[in-house]
Image (cartoon, rainbow, N blue to C red):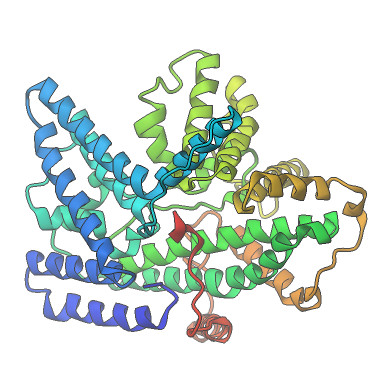
Length: 483
């Protein structure tokens, strides 16, 4: 089920009530409830998905014991079993048809006609996320940074915890499992902060992202008929759409987890205020970036190798990251383009220059900071075109349209007159993010110095806008559900 659906509006309070008032007697009963709720939540799409989730969970649980063996050869054997198992699941369900089609196309270029055998199977929701949970768990045992879990229910909750099961953040066993293994006590401040996160996440998704989606779809579907300025406007709209959609999901996930006494990894840290691409990737989809850093980049040598090797490692990481998002050349090109962006910084060892928050100690950025943020944002916008387009050819024609004389025309597409509210929403988002850039989220401290009725009036306006913009009969799914 979706976070922005009527079903979840019923599901969450019911589970919350059972968790804190019925199953609060001991840790085991709380964890069993969470496991049942998580499988119910995931099985809402299709009960068949549960079979694969349960199988993957059980295998990695067993592999963990094998990897913990004192015999190094045996330990490495079970590590590779986990890698093959998880990548095999991804390969069959997510990538098989892509490779089969591309191989057939390659043979066709050589004059050999091949009819590829394609699989007519649905891509299980969240498969890229829970397989990475399992792999990181086994990796950590192999590296000796944690011991295998002895309680299957606790491990299964770690893999399938419903707030993060479908689209992350990608958790680590060392961070989440210890929280699952201790009894939770209700904390009002934590739950209240979680409610703020849920409110802000829903506002970003339902009010901003879904509104932008309407116009993004129009422009990207008919980009050849519109001017370069209109295409550029559509690309900028998509940049804010995907940010509000994915960070909105992450906010809701973290907020829901707080309702049950858990703290999840922060997945976004105001990425559009980044002053270079390296900083952007430290602030965007943090759990995935850090996963690839720890389990792929560092094992390949990380920053301990020469400059040329560092650049090569960086390219590999971004290409793999792009391919992780989907079996399409558009994602691979998107990853490669970001690798090109960051290469000069890696080569000159300036990829860790901007480690602080922009305009620290000041209300406004300097002209230089503003210029740097603008350049970084525009670079990301051009990369997002490949992410959004259905094919590389469409993305390329989209870009050529932008870099034409029509770039200086007045933007126009059917319905553009109704976009006035969109600009106000984007400005509101940027102001909220800027004001809260030193906090975990924009609503964390806003209004705390005002009278309660002022703060609650602000919250109620946001809630009314969410219900006003939402369509419970036709719920818009989150973009990252497809990955």
